[in-house]
Length: 166
Image (cartoon, rainbow, N blue to C red; front, side, top):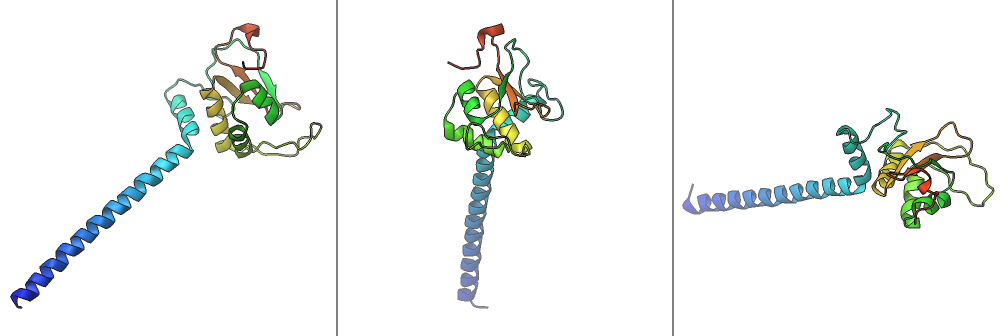
C-alpha cells in the first residue's frame, strides 16, 4: 500500500468521524428539542403531577380533585365554557382549547342540553393544572345533573368568592 493510499484512508476516516460527530450532534439536538416541546405542551399536567407527588396537592386517586384544600369559599358549578370564563377569567381561546381537550361539550345555543361526553383524563389534568395555577381548585362532578365540574377560589374567605373573579 502506497503512502498516498494510506493518506487517503486516513482522510476518509477523519471525514467519516467528523460526519458521525455532526450526525450525533444533530440527533442529540433533535432529541433535546423534542423533549423540550413535550414538556412545554404538557407543562400544566406535569406541574400538577409533581405537586401531587410532593404532597402539596391531595389526589383522590380518581383524578377528581386537583387543588389545595385551604379555601372556605363555596364551590361554584361550571356547566358551560362561558360560565368558566366568567368565574376564572382568562383568554377565551386558551380556555376553549383546554375545555375541548378535556372532553367537555360546547353548546351552540344557551338552552342546548348536554350531549353525551367523556372526560379525557389528560385534558382534564391540563385544565385542572391551569385552574390551579390561576388560583382555583377544581373537582369533577360526575353525579351532578347541572354541573360538569366545580371550582372555588383558593384562599378565599367564606362568601368573599361571589363566583366572579375581579
